[in-house]
Structures are given as structure tokens and as C-alpha cells.
View 1: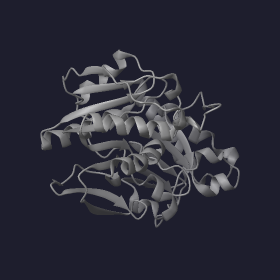
View 2: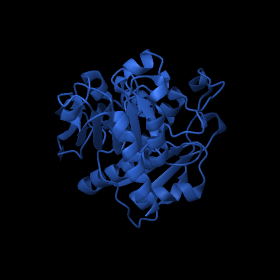
View 3: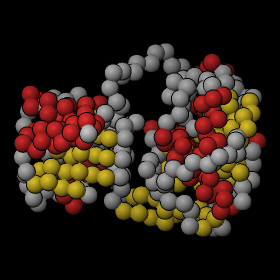
View 4: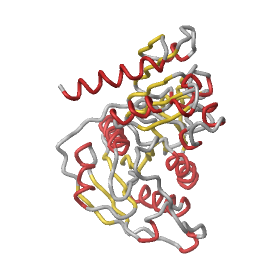
Length: 323
């Protein structure tokens, strides 16, 4: 038996969430006495693949085909299912991001497996299989029991500690059966945002709300983000007003993110907004209203004018970096 992990790559490189997935799988495998198999689809150099062994992978399956360098859900689901069957995997892991949420249901149906999305902890029991997940737009938790033999899970980012090992994983080419009918959907063009940190990848996010008081007053927020190497985000009212582009909108109806550090600047903290950022490891809030809901979710809070506090905060960070 084994735990198989789909490790997504970005232009041939793995990111933190892939290593977090492997670390999570390693803990399940140690508990069940099984192996961790990492599955990489697309062109990735062996030096990059070997990094997965440093986080607990026993073996790495690589599938290389030019047609798979772009994500096609049907084709990827077929390859992942074949790999899981080859390795007799009883658990299949994905990240709880757009890719994982698209692939996990397809793979679960093909494997006749139970699916649990948004898990946050190592299973409390393997027989029966029981695991904790987030529910009600991340405001509560549920313990889910899976009665099927196989399980498909998506893991919330920042849910487990990344642990490095000295494991030297073997790399094995996997020749999956790739059918033309799996490519009825074709990717004709890919447009990527360049020159700034992507929200979904960022370790630190600096976000502004209506308390910023207008699009012309965002420079202090941008200065803080630049100093921290952070991505910039905003609340829905800000994007609706046209102050910031819609791709920066985070919340229940926008992007759902889970950075290590989230700055909520001039954001009241409506429940729809918190639904998209509550998985952040730490939340720092600045607001003039001491009763703003954001303070209930924040780990650190400052009651005050964001336009006075931001320059001082950025200045202190510069001093720390120069020290």
C-alpha cells in the first residue's frame, strides 16, 4: 500500500505547498507503515525532483509528455488514477487550490474513493479513516469518517509543519496510457502575470479595504508590500469601486488564500472577507474602529489611522532589514 501525492510544478519548479503535501503524506505513511509516492506531471529536471525526497518521498514517478505541459483536467485525472492503481495507493493527496479542487473529484470517481476536501490535520484514525476538515466557509471544523477503502484528500495550505529528511528518493519514469480523447479540451494560450508576487503563491499578503479612502492613497500600502516582498490584495468593495483590479480581490467570492502573514489594512472584516483569509497563519489588522470584526480574527491588532501607521510600520521594517 502507499500514499500518492500529486505535486504540481510551476515552470518546472516546486513550491512550498508541494513540500507541505509530501510532509503530510509522510506522517500518514509512518502511521500506516506504507510508502510515499510523489507524482510529477510535465517537464521537471531530476535535480528538482530529488528535492521531494528531502521532505519524505520514497519514490518519484515522473510523467513527461509535451501534451501534459498544460493542465488538462481529464488527461491529468487519467494519469493520476493510473499511477494510484499501479502503486496500490489507498490515499491520494492534492493541494486545496484551484488545481487540486478540479482534479480530486475526478480521481475519486475513477477510483471509487471517498473524497474529503480542505483537510487540516493528520487523520485521527486510519481504520476507520477519520480526518478533520474546515466547513461553513472556514468558520468551523468537522470530523469526517470515510467508509470506502480508498481516500482522496485536498490539504489546506499551512495546515502542517514542513519537515525535512535525508531521504534519497528514487526517480522512475511512468508511461501512462494517454488517449487522444482526453485532450478534447485544448489550451491555446496561457497569459501569466509577471513582475509581481502572485496572491495564491505569496507567503505574505498586504491587503487594503475602504479604510484606505481612495485609489490615490494606496502608495503607503504598496511601499509596505515592496519592503516585505509581499503580494497586494483588497476587499470586495475596493475592487467593486474600481480602486484595485478584480484579480486582487480576496474573500469568499474572490481568491481564497492561506499566507503565513496577512495584513488587513482598513478592512472591517465582513464574514465574506474572513471566509477567504481565515486560513492565514497570522493576521495583523489596522482599523480605526476598535469593535471591527477583523479584530476577532486577528492575532495582532492596532486601533488607529492606517495612513499614519503604515509609514511608521514600513520605516521600522526598513530599520530592521538594515540592521
